[in-house]
Image (cartoon, rainbow, N blue to C red; front, side, top):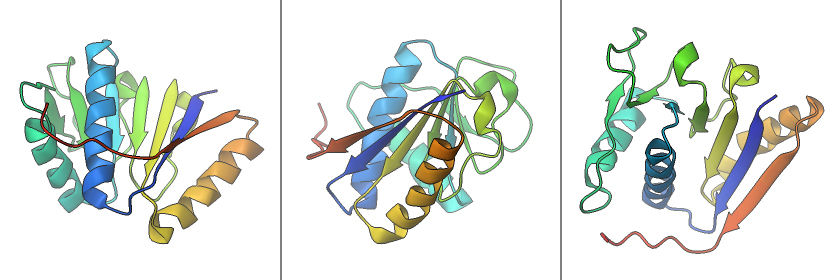
Length: 150
């Protein structure tokens, strides 16, 4: 069973949500974790792809958009709308409105939410589904995002 953590930002800003996700992705990557970022659309994938290059001065998080074929270079973060390949199920960052289809195979699932009802309504359903599956869900309220370039 995966460890599931919900991060609930006080901000309603999508930018803040993606910025916070970039920080967590960078942290997981530096720890050597295989990461997959699940989003709802290709537009969202492209937005996160762009932010991972620019969110912090001096940061480098190798990543690529996932099109269904696992990349040859495995030491990078994958971003996509499809199920995570087996090798990238160590840490799944869920920024989508759906529960990851193969959630049982993940070691960790990080649900990152802004303070917007459009985001929170489907998140409540996922929270309930995780709890019904017997998973101890942890949540953190994030009061403020420092999104200045460090």
